[in-house]
Length: 285
Image 1 (cartoon, one colour):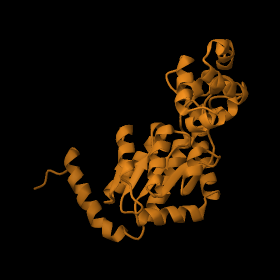
Image 2 (cartoon, rainbow, N blue to C red; image 1 turned 90 degrees about the vertical axis):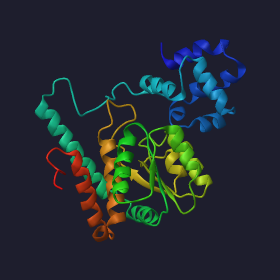
Image 3 (cartoon, one colour; image 1 turned 180 degrees about the vertical axis):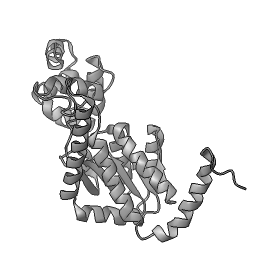
């Protein structure tokens, strides 16, 4: 039985409000997959709470798990989870495919780079009083990479693994700050909540997301677009994480390039300090 089939079977037993959501999903399964809970509620003519209750009535713990199940069954049958590896590939073949994927992604990032958007983002970061970085899951890996670079460069920067704390920090953002939001899909609810709060505070938002219309891209002040090299249903985030890290690194380097002479002594001192954690280093008095 498919998700849509389950909905059809359950339709007579659902409440009137849940039937409204159910009929919307049945009529618009592809559109539904790319909408936020607020967008779904508005399109179906109901509330966000009713959408969530409908999902739970269908025995799914949350909207994302419902969407994933729907996407798996609604995807074209010929679309593989990945082209990077097949059952018959040996290690050398996988390595060659992976290497070529990175090469192709790098070329696409460079050729399609929105220079004006990158310059605007760099200027915002250079002049920010405080930086808030948002990102979860695989996108969180790229977010954390930029966070660690900015920490070492002595930026006032917040990045929280705890999602509640991240949103609470966003509440205190100001006009003179900047938020950098990572989400390959552009649909991550936790990131969107923090972004909406920042925008309510007049805090500019830099989005690192796919160059395909999505909720995050629509909200952001500046969009640094990623090539859509991976489908959302995939065996694992590979080129998407690489491309997010690439743009984060480009943003970082463009921001610090005129401060490098002043940063050099700090980098050397912190390197010496951290050398105490490495075997054979930091023993000299």
